[in-house]
Length: 129
Length: 509
Ligand SMILES: Cc1cc2nc3c(=O)[nH]c(=O)nc-3n(C[C@H](O)[C@H](O)[C@H](O)COP(=O)(O)OP(=O)(O)OC[C@H]3O[C@@H](n4cnc5c(N)ncnc54)[C@H](O)[C@@H]3O)c2cc1C
Image (tube, rainbow over all chains, first blue to last red; front, side, top):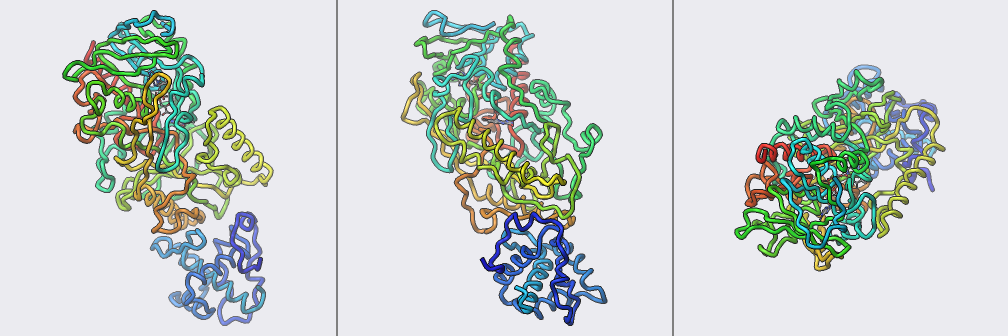
């Protein structure tokens, strides 16, 4: 089974301590690479699982299948520095305002689902996956 | 006092002040409530003191519609009734369960929760539970480590439960057999109810057993307490004077059959370990996540809860509706028990010893009242010549939408509180899918077949559980429920039976 076809099963989410996806990425971006790390989800999923959600998200929202579009959508409305940190507040806000998506059965904030998608496109670009 | 009806001379006449049909939780609670009144109580029990397949066979029936358990596997036909194998989960109904809700057709009891509260206190005693306390704050003072999830109280609250597998057959046999006023007749199956000429009063009951004996029972007041399906069956089958059966002038008897849907609906993954015993099933009071009245109103959904079970265990369980099919009662329950044990063993092997962070959420929800969900008489008869029953279990879109919404609400709140993330099961993901999986579980809770409504066109019994139009015939049990509530039925059915008992005392004494 190709990695990107991987569907999240309990096996991949049973692992709890996850190395930050940050270390998988080349650091030559025009944006803070931490934006591509969904912090809360990293507490319950490993990278494979995050990518599986990213793939499913992009299948559901094909018009967002571009790194630039995803970055824009994630940080455009966030003012000032430390945008990655502020995304956590955005995740919470998403749940408060009903800005959620259902991906492979998971009820996720749109922001964190996009973060999964961003990581996926990024790693695809780097041929890591 | 105990009399085996097989030993009486054929065609005996049994007489008393009050006659209770069925010695389950409902019937025994009422009988004991009368034991000190000095009145002669006739308690008729179809079975003996233990399980007998010949008796259990009388419960066989057929079913159509949504897949259901074999009907003879959901009740027990001997002294103590279905408490002989119940699980003892108890919690009272909520205020909202009794109210008329615009979005729930045929909702609204003629009584309120307040009317029932004094009898809940008595029911707690009959079921040998703790105090009538179901507030989280009370139990937090009594038991350590009952920490509640930090979810928005405007949407989610913690509904407390108490547990006791009170086996009425064991608990109360001695007291009843030794009583001077309670006359327990075993092997006394009521097969027919005979009324006076204008069918306004019951004259007598006809009782039969496998020994070929037939007896007559006379009393001032009669109470049917043989379970929701049997009570309706008895009214329908008593059709020698009125074709459609007793109390059935408006074709309501047997309709509005309701169950509790108990289905595995989602997973909750906590972002961080959350040390608490509040949601653990360990025999002590525990909570389920319930939806507030306001949120039910806003979302136009039924009342329901989500219970948490460790995913490491639950994921190995076979759906009950699948495992409990088949003809043999003992084999079915052996398979069920084996499945639970095996799931436990598998979970133990996987358990890393850390605090559980992944849970399966099981919904427990009322079924919307639905006249098409009903029991009728089948063409086949049992060994005593009584038509068997046919169940058509029918679920509605409101049931499905409510289950989906309850999960969504908790999922959103878990996200808002950054507590965790929820994963919905396949059958709930598509908002337009109103179908039901074949293995949709029910709780073995039969309700609504003789529903309470003061309008005879909408109910079989009035607010005093009296059958409309027949002034000395009453029904005790969950068949009288107008709506089925989120909580399991037995605590409420015992409370309602004790309320009926009180009412009859005022009438007779
Ligand atoms: C496996 C299982 C688990 C359950 N767990 C729970 C739980 O955790 N919590 C909860 O609240 N509820 C639970 N229930 C439901 C609970 O057992 C019932 O709600 C309760 O026992 C019903 O009591 P009852 O007295 O109304 O009827 P029954 O217990 O059915 O008693 C009826 C009595 O009438 C007798 N009878 C029947 N027909 C006749 C006749 N024609 N003439 C004379 N006598 C007759 C029967 O032999 C029986 O003794 C469970 C049920 C099952 C099957």
